[in-house]
Image (cartoon, rainbow, N blue to C red):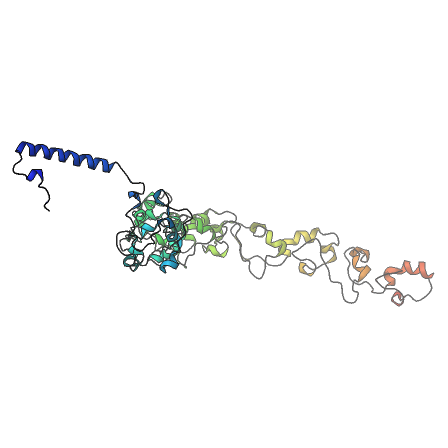
Length: 435
């Protein structure tokens, strides 16, 4: 059987009729396309979910995974044991990813899985950070982990204030994951800080490079320059601006370490005592220290140590001749003769006491002299509490008295013993208790 000839091929048909027939067929084709385009099957796949996963090896029962009436929705209670069915366990964020992120029309999954992370994840770092993504990322979150610890493996560990700085401060393209190697020199970031310094004109002093000589990442201010050990900046020197000593701009070497090189005006202006008039040495360390310039502590000669009450005296109390601080006698009487002469209990001068004040007095308390009585008559117990004049009744006479008890206790003897008996009181009495 032969199929009928198409009208347009029929040579017997009039040309005008063939044109009309062709126009009708074209119109019918257009209507058919429009109708098909507006009729979407209920089970149609949503294009925004990506390409359809090939289901060639899937079970024939679609209801195992899909909801009825909506081909693009998976059943809420759908469970698929990926490890059991495929031998690959989905960990972390991979466990919640849509199937189509891995199973799509790019090719077999194994082809990309064999490439590791880069099989699915674009290397936004452009090879700058190596090929081991797990060094910064894990399967729980793509956000980088332990960034500061990892940075310590570079030439510029993040210490102190640097650890809190946003990555983009040094890596402008960090938001795109691109980390080209910047300079590790301080001035690459801190050039403006050096120029804006108010306490020290860094530009004028030539201090626009090598910030690490004075500054640390822990604290940019105050600067912590390590001064030479020949002149450590201790106590009062530590808070002084560099320019107070280094007055020549840009010159920080060659200065003398002698105190007088800075403190000569202080030396010359001092009046208590007048250092210049007294001929004091310009070696200020003999009396001063960096903790406090005032309240100098002069080491007095060992022949006259300034102990106890002497330690609190002003120099001019003993050194009364202005500018003269040598030649004084270390004998107490050279300063305390007026006290010696004015004393009445007992009268030292009238009694002929020696002027060696140390026999009875100490620098601790001048008015509480302690005289050591002769061993022939020790002042024990009750005797120790009496004033000297109790026994030494003749003014100015402190020798020649008898050591016999009866010389002082005659009246006691007569009242107690009715003028009878032995006068050797020690046979019955002692200094602890006469009664």
